[in-house]
Image 1 (cartoon, rainbow, N blue to C red):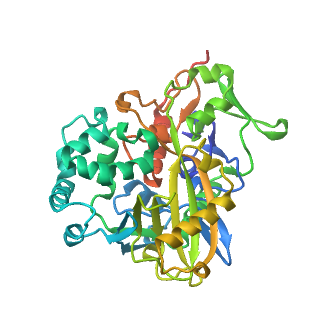
Image 2: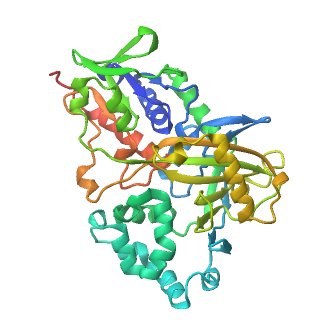
Image 3: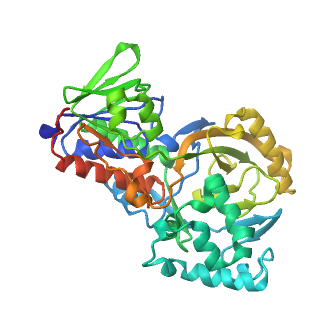
Length: 435
C-alpha cells in the first residue's frame, strides 16, 4: 500500500488521526501527521498538575469498546487497563439519590410509584423494543415519551437530553440512544489505563515514528487544495506540504474554512450543528460520593453532570486529591462558552458547594476550566441516508470526522473504528482522476 499511495498526510492529531497514522505506518505507507496545537490527543489532551499529568476532559474505557481494546492490544497496553465496578447517582431538585438497583429505583421519590415501575420495566426492555424499528427516522422524544409516559419524559428524560443536545434534544434520532445503550447498557464496569490517556497517546506517537512516520506539532493547516491530482497543504511561514492522499479528521465546518474554493465545492453538503462543552475540573480534599457518574437535574447549577474519577481510577490517585469533572454541553457561540474561564470556575465552585453542603470552600484546592467547540454533532432525522462518504469524489481527500461515526456514539472507540474503516477504504480505493 505504501508504494501505491505514496505520501499520505493525516490532518489532526486526535485519537482518530493517531489511530489512522498508526495503522497506515504498519501497512508500510509513508505518513506525515500534522497537529495544529502543541499537544496530541484532541479531547484526550492533558496538563501538568504537581508531578502528574491530568486529562482536561473525562474518559473511560467500556468492556464493549472492541475497536479501542484491539488498538491497545497492538500497542501492548491492553493489560494496563484497570477495570472497576462503578456506581451512578442522580441529583434532582437538589436531592441526591443512588441510581443503580431496583431498590434504588423504588426509593427514587421524584417519580411516583407507578412511574418508577414503568421506568424500570421499560429500561430493561428498551434495547429489545427498538429492534426492527426505523429509529433513525423516529424522534427521540416521540419514542421515549410513548414508552415511558409524559411524566418520566418531562421530569427526567427531557432535562437529561436537553443537557446533551440543547434545544434540539427532542429531534435527535432515537437510533442514537439505542446505540448508546448498546455500548453502555447495564454495564457498571469501566476501565482506565495505567498512566492515563497520555500513555496511550505517547504509545501511538512512538509507534508512528518507529515505523518511519513523521509527527509534527504546532503545524496548523492554513489552506488546503488539490493541484494536478495531489493535495497541497499550506502551513505557517509560506511552507507547503504536498501529498498523494490526505485524511482529514477536522470537523467539517473547520475543513470548509480551510479548503480552497474548488475543494470546498466538492465537500459533502451535510451541515451539522455541533455541541461544544465547558468542563470544570475540581481537585478536592475529600470525595463527594462513591458515584462515578451523577446527572444533575433542576438543582440550581449550570453544570448538568458530575464525573468523579476516584471510583474509576483508584483511591486517591492524585496526591490524596479527588478529581471531579463538572460539565455543560453548549453551543460554541453561547454566552457560557465565550465567558472567561476564571469567572466560570468561581461561579461553578459556589454552585458545587451549594449542592454539597458538607463540602467546605477550603476543601476545593484547585479548579481548572477547559472548553472544546466541536464535541458532538446534533444529527437530524434520517441521517443514515445522508451520512457523507469517506472519500471525497474526484479528489485525493478522505474524511474521518464525527459526522461519519453515526449511529455509533462519539467516543474514542468509535473514532478508532472509523480510523480502521478509512485505512481499509484507502487500501482499496482507486487513484482519483483530476478534474
